[in-house]
Each structure stands twice: as C-alpha cells, then as structure tokens.
Length: 396
Image (cartoon, rainbow, N blue to C red; front, top):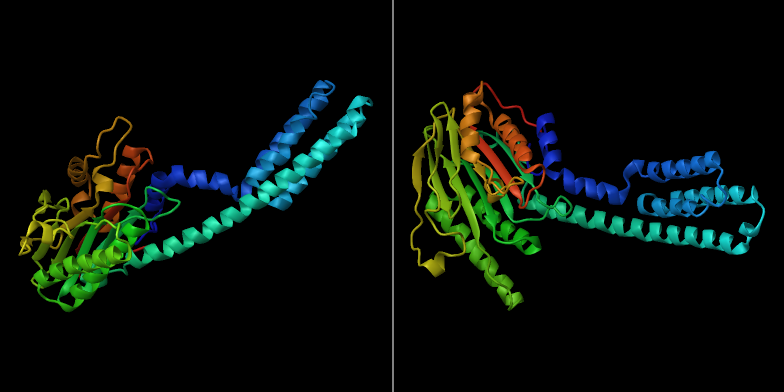
C-alpha cells in the first residue's frame, strides 16, 4: 500500500474495516447501483399484502411511500418511474372497489407526492455531484502531500498507509515521504496540529521544505532547520493574510539512512519514538528530544539534537501518528502498539517480515481493536534497507 490507497487483498480488507462505517453511510446517501431494490421490495410487499388480505383501503396510502423511498436512493428518472408504478397500482386497487375512494382528491394527492419526490431526488443528486467534485478536489490536494512511493525508492523497501478518520473528506494534517537523495534515502512522518484545509496546507509547507532541503543538504541539522523555517514562514504568511490566524505546530520524525549500511541519523520533533523490529526484538528510537516544529523560537532552542543509531539491514522501522497509538476500543483502552509488535515478532516469519507484511498485519489488528471506528487520522510507514536481489513486491 502506498499513499492513501490500499494494495494487497489483506490491506484492502483492513482499510475497508477501518473506513467501513463512514463509507457505508456515503453509499446509503448515494444509493449506488442497488438503491432501486428498496422501493421495489416495498412496492411488491404492499401490493402482495393488499392483494392477499383483500382489506378495502388498506394499501393505497402505503403506496405513497414508494416514490419517497426512491427519492432518497435513486435518480430522478427512477423516482418518477416508481411514482408512476405506485400511482397505477393505487388506482387499480381503488377501481376494484367503486365508491368514494375514486375522488379526484386522492389522485391529486398521489400526483403531488410523486412530483415532490422527483424534485427531492433531483436536488439530492445535484448536491451529491457537488460533493463528489469537492471530494475529488480535496483528494487531489491530499495527494500533493501524501504521494505514492515507487518500489525500492531511494534504496529502501517501504510501505505506507493513510487512513482518514473521516472517509468522506480525507483531509487531515498527517504527512509522510521517502526521498531518494545523493546521500541515501531520507524518510519523514509527522502530524500537524488541527484539522481541515489549514492543517493540510501546513503539512504541505513542512513536507515541501523536507523534500527540497532533504535532497540538496547533506547535513541533517540544516535539513531540520529548513523544515522549522518553512513552517515559520508559512505561519507568518497566514498570519499576515488573516490576523486571527493561530500559528500551527507539527510533530515529526526524520530518518536519514547512512551509506555505511549499519546506522541512521535520526531527528525527533516532539513525536512519539518509532519502533524498530528485527531479529533482536522490539526497541524504540529516541522520542521528543526536540520541540515540535514551530516552537523553536518560543522555546529558545538553538541547536537540533541529532542521534546516530544502529540499524541492521534486516531491521524494519515502524513510524506511526497518534491516530494509531491513541486509537481506542469500545471500553476506551488505547491500542497496545508495543505489545502488538512484540507479539508479531513472536509469530512465524515475524522477525523477517517485509514492510508491506508488517503494515498489513498492523492495519488488521488496528481494525479489530477499533471495530472500524477511528477517532483521528492514522498514518503508518514501515521502511527498511533493500536487500540486494530480493526486491519487495509492491502494490501502488
């Protein structure tokens, strides 16, 4: 899986479980291709009950529900068809019982309900079209920040997933990227304070600074300074445009894979420490050693602390945002990431699992823990050095 899309069958299943509640709600509003079944079944049931029970005047009024159901689930043309069928069925039942029920008032009521249902269906369809265009625009903007990562990019195997808490908008402040640079692969993952377009815009500023400085600068201290400066300038621009704008912060981690093949340079800006999984078990990289991006001036931090930590080729680094570690089950318990990682390594093949296998298992565990109900966006990135001759299969 890469970017915001799911790849392998297991990953797609876990993604559907994590977003199923929101997605099913959107499908219900749109009707999809099976929306016509509901008014059809309702029409058949009412006609059958009216015919077999043969109780005078017991089904005609219920038939008015058919176009109303179609208005909520079908196109305007389908709504008009269902309304016509309901009206014909109602007239046939009434004609079978001559009497006061043949009054024109009942016919006028039926026609009025059908016209109202068609209008409602038209307005609903137009609003859903506008919503679809808005979602496509937001998704396009999101992909500028969270872009697909090609297989083996930068000399590392990687697998990433972005699971929005709101599957309708897919708009949050999480970001990640993997760079291929003259100095080796460089990886970042982070989370911007807040939600909405402002958070997405801020994430774009931070990841844009990382992409530019991470490629051109060899010194990781300079890369860190450029990311801090990029966020500072972005906040200054928004404050100038809107005096009521509140500066936004961002937590982030940056990992630079060194050419020696055994170490990485690691920078943590107020983020939870990533986990390293390998034959030696699970360990956590240093966390929250530097203030979050956007706080350097307020805290007076003059120097960014950079750690050089050992990382064997068979070890995988797992980076996540707080949407994973703070995911709750129905009782309110947080997702136990470290115990889960230890349990995963204890399974067969867990110690040599590839990034996509690790991420697939984690997403399935997360979906089971939350029952598909995420309260915050969850971003996951697993990365390790590429083993020569054994490229990792990818599903862009």
